[in-house]
Image (tube, rainbow, N blue to C red; front, side, top):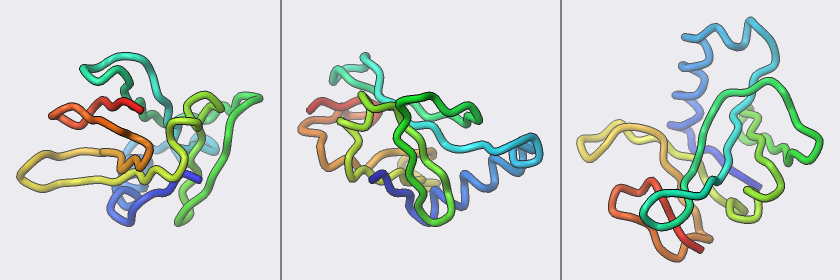
Length: 110
């Protein structure tokens, strides 16, 4: 399962409304893991409306979260969160599978 915090849920809903994505079709949050960053792996976050055959689909707090099977292996029990504090603003991941993260928190290793 991939989870979403209340703050991230509010921000996702706001961004979707602002971009009029819900009016244009059934959009969801696509989360994936790609190679790169100082720790080796980076997160990628997008809105999408085209499911792929091997996608893993989850829903938490009314938000549909989709990931490919390969990325899911790195994201099991991860929570998507959002911070608007002084120390940084934006989405971030609380990933219990990460053994190491970089200083900026944008990449990780397992």
